[in-house]
Length: 433
Image (spheres, rainbow, N blue to C red):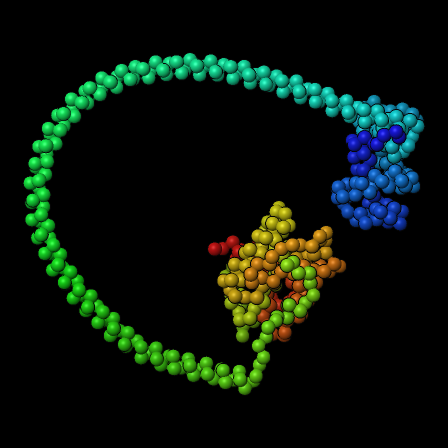
């Protein structure tokens, strides 16, 4: 060809190659296309378009295999091209794409004609759009002129109304001036009456102040009596508080002596911190299950998280795809981690959220929320396997609660001593204020 493949024909060719690529053995694919073999046709057409076009142009054997797939899918079109005829009802783009792959006689002419047809259709569409825009602008201009005339007539009518209203206001002003003079005379009369009322009010106020002083003295006496009653109640209660504090001090000093005798070191890290993963940035849980609560009752999760030193492990995408699967993955992570941060702050439980990281194309840049440990599984490892490793890393006897609807994950962590709960239970708890 003496010019590049037309864009419309190129898209059809890449689409045909993307659909046929999944059915070819991996050994028959060019080296540059093997990494896209497991993609879906839509993803191949999106991410491997350039590689597919280059392989079709540079690899005749690969193009022949795609042509054979086309021959099996559209035998009538291929036979018509090989016989030198073009079906009249066929889409020119489909005919050009098939001719490019099969390389029948006159294929370059068909491809060039398809490109010219597409350019011609685009030019006709642009001309039609320009004509439509001109008509629209002319109609708008007519409407603007009509509106301008209407505004001018309205402003003239309003000016006449304003003039008539000004005449009316002048007449009203003269009337108000006469009323003002009468009102001033009435005001002088009212001022004299007001002065008499003020003298009467001063006498009544003096009597009221005397009564108020008597009442304040009575209130002070009552407040003194109430304070004496409260002081007596506090003195009686302080004896009980003293006995209770003495008992508490005895227990605390005994515990401190036992701690010094055992010389237990202070732990600075948790077992889950030692499990390899991709970082973005008393009662048993099984005893709680026998308290008669429904499996989706948020109160069940509250009781589990109230167990001392409990570790909550969350299968992140299992929860988000159960609660809000239509959101993008980044928004799913942000919404879940925000809820877990509030839950960790309220319960003081250790919380670890695990996401599947084996299909990540680029590293995830994020700041883990306070109180929540975030981990992604390594390449070649699923989030389910990472959850099982986290559970096995905990010491025997420590309460561990795993949130996941996956039956395989639940069975695996139950054998390791953890308590599995459904994702809907956590979603119900996060939805509750």
